Length: 172
Image (tube, rainbow, N blue to C red; front, side, top):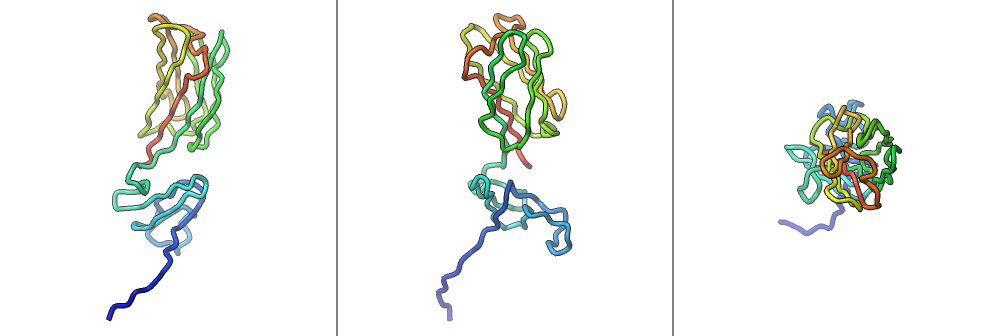
């Protein structure tokens, strides 16, 4: 005979995105707090986001791939390094900007997060016409940003609030 029961299911919780363990046995001492088994759910207590682990890896509870994002508003004037106002930082990095020459800048401090499955996106809000921003992962920890207007490299292109840079790393 089958009977109805009320039970509670406890979802594993921790600080940060869940991880796949190096071994299949959580009792052998090599698991970390964020490791989860296939079939388990996990809630990141920092963000409230819920994740699941299946045969193909960890995904968000809605099925989307896990992604970590660093996003900053950026302005630049004269020969100064760009000014960055960070608005999202689930990559948990401290990025420093530098000026390297006319229309050329570096963004350093990505702590080897630029190695695979990344998307670099720049958005420009400027008082000038025909302005462009190009972003390239120069190393696993730094990005080169180039700006131009009317087809020529130029400073002072990011002259108003609203320009932004977004680095998205997809966790596979």
